[in-house]
Length: 324
Image (cartoon, rainbow, N blue to C red; front, side):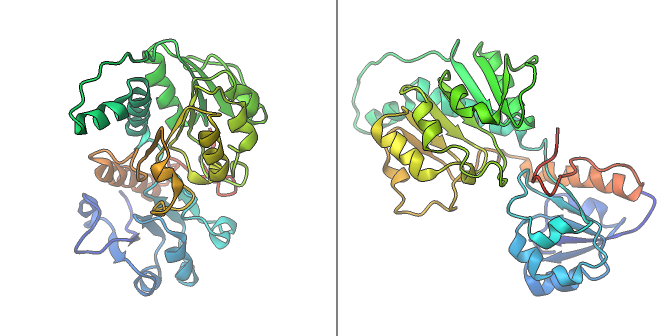
């Protein structure tokens, strides 16, 4: 590293810093801020912000002091919680944590699919009743999987599915030839057609204006009645009322949901008690070591920043994700 910079860490304190951040303490000037007043002060004269807690309300409240800010590193892969109009319109470069969570999320998705195929929910329930009841299970081999959103996370999911000899297709913004993981990649305008020939539909989409409620009544109605829906993308991509109707009417066989429009999911939300639904608290990517992985990525990017090299994972702020 050839220069000294001032780095503000948003959403952390000096007493409880991101693990491993001390490795750069001799190279840069660190300032920690966990509320708007502290962040307002920390941003003065600061050119780098590490958004350990990437929340727009926190940054927007201190944005008036960010006159020297040139680069923000988000600790999350999705940046929808961080973006706000002034940031989008600014010249500040935004990078995300693309690559840190991919394999953990892909493993989690595979676990959810296995839970459905092997009927593990029923196994656990019968165990609590000490009930010995044999039942046959499904195989995942040769099942048809549709991955909607074929960025790094979607590709990691496809890789795991292909390893179990499942047939994997993808949905992207525009259609393109298939590749080593996807036998076919269709454009988003064909989503309703594509879900009709899938046993598992995996939502790995980011939250953008284009993806808002992309999974609506028409899409769920087009799915096979034995199909399962898995969402590890963003809650805003799903019309939750349409999903509930599809579950209640039997239009689909089940859903596994790790993300929701309102988080935490309200205690009175009917999804909690819906049969054949798995609810988890936005934890698919939070495997042990993720915090250290995010800090390691930031340190690598900081080295690039200070030596004038291109940054990794630069987000197109108007689109809300890193373009392929």
